[in-house]
Length: 71
Image 1 (tube, rainbow, N blue to C red):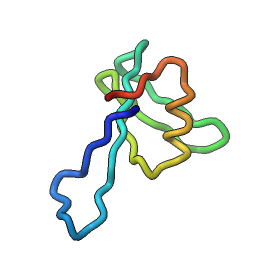
Image 2 (cartoon, helix red, strand yellow):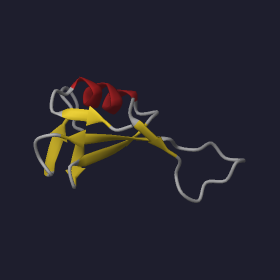
Image 3 (cartoon, helix red, strand yellow):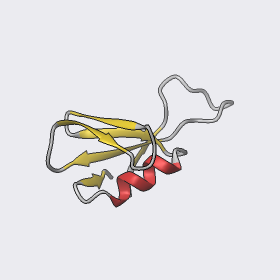
């Protein structure tokens, strides 16, 4: 399961944006291109962080063989 964190500064009355973090097991820095889209994701310090509600990015990251979901 990917690490989920709430956005800092969000109060209980607003919806919190849960973030998922994935660790890159090969590179400490690179740009990932989501196939079939014009979207890219940046790997910084061997990790990439996306919104849990971003189904396209989450699906891509979970299926990538060189990325591991952080607990």
